[in-house]
Length: 411
Image (cartoon, rainbow, N blue to C red; front, side, top):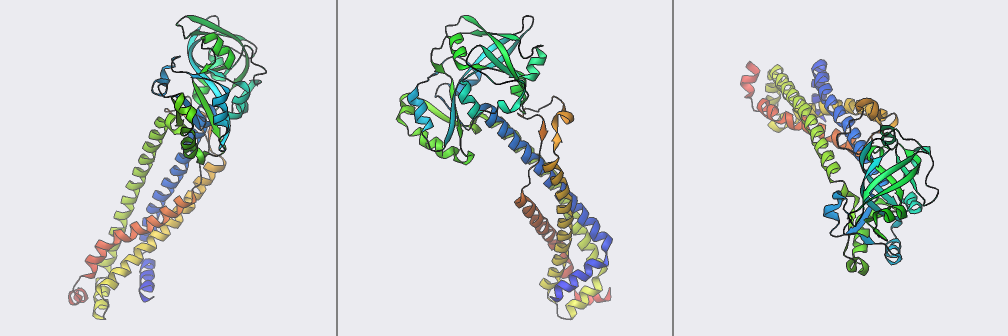
């Protein structure tokens, strides 16, 4: 207890110096936690956009289809039949499934032509798997399986199309002949996924199958689960099904389609951590200087303490407690500043469109971004700040404690 009292008394001797170092540490903590909240929100939003608008939780495909899936070739397709549908739906973890036919096409408005990605969907089941309905800004969802189409508002604006207009999709069939899909635009969507807004056109599955001459075939089955945590367990259960082996099918998690997003997220986390590291190193240098200056100013006092019987480790401990005090003060200030920043991000958020315009940096994110509050990150950083402060104080504290008491008193 005596050592703690001595350490606290020493902290109050040079308040300005202590507060200055604590503020440097606080800035590092505040910057890291605020950016961490932003990155967590950005990552989660990216994942949600993929799951809710593109991949679902799982994708069932032909084994040979997956490596070439980006080519949008009408090869290695699945024959869609009720037996396969029931086997997937009967899994307790599955909420809904939708058969999907993905194809390359050129969108024509009668004047201009633009390459796009087409999706043939079972319109009823798609509403249970994807959240297209949520983002409709004009028109209404498919009413039947006739020649109707839904596309992104940005794509429609680019091609000068609106609800009620007819569009033409130029496609190449499975037999390598050309065909067209003429459909009425029934709805425009404005989602938080830039690909959906600017590159996708949705039509009923039967219309796409007929135009592409693939009979009852699909490119993939999109599966939505009741809970995201059940992805790995569901994959294991589906792989055990005999029909999966007979049809040479593979099951892929949504993460398999999000590799680039995950890699970019990790890179951003490393960048944030690097910034945090630089600020903490500056704070550590400040703590080292503080301990050295304190030791130089208290040389006689240290000599007297050693003459009175204080052991070297007790003197070192006093300096360590002082450094811990700076760490606690900096941590508290940092948490308060972080709390303000994170509260703003989680309640008000940031309008990415206003901030970045059309730039997405490869992430499937656009619109309003909200941060995420991660309590354990706050606790971890607070404790880390204290530990860093204590560790930074040990070398100069050891240097101060090993002084000869007689020489120290005479100086």
